[in-house]
Length: 207
Ligand code: ADP
Image 1 (cartoon, rainbow, N blue to C red):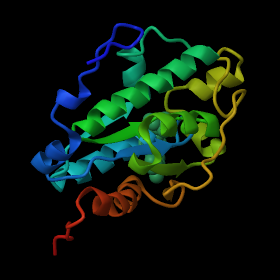
Image 2: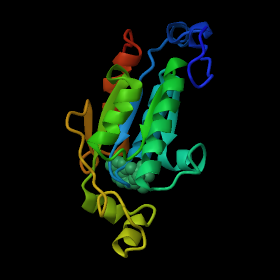
Image 3: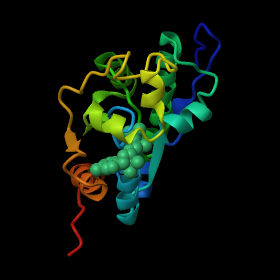
Image 4: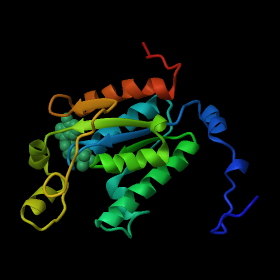
């Protein structure tokens, strides 16, 4: 094997591959992205979706903004460079899970077309399912689960998505849920029905 110019010697070809692992697990790996404003319901719906998938024999891993930022990305702040590095690492972590045959459920605001394109560049379009958790900002602000909107409105929190930092709705999501109209279980079921056929092509609904 030839070293590259950084003296790093990747051994990908000697590691058991994704197909073997997918066969072992009896599932196809995909990376599900729940995208929406803070308080839209990403984590709540993501957890309900995970429960439904596990009940149907799917191995999953939830990746959530707060958990990632308090763990692997705890050294990152909210500057432009750090936001980019945050999303780059999240995409690379996804890649590791995908190569292991695991279905990932990503609960991140992932606010712009640019950040989503960056993820797509790292992961490849074919492995990504985009779900728009479509909750109007007024509703998110009423919920204000973490009190962040109040702080942002008071000017105590800068660059808050939807207030003084942009949020661009995904243009062609694979699935959209409207949390004003559907409760958590219904939203999760809607997403489940779309993803399960991709994860387990032979899946049949239990009668
Ligand atoms: P996010 O992860 O997008 O920041 P969370 O899931 O942490 O949002 O918070 C959403 C909040 O909204 C939760 O407290 C949840 O109980 C509440 N909520 C109320 N109605 C709904 C709904 N229909 N779907 C999802 N969440 C809802």
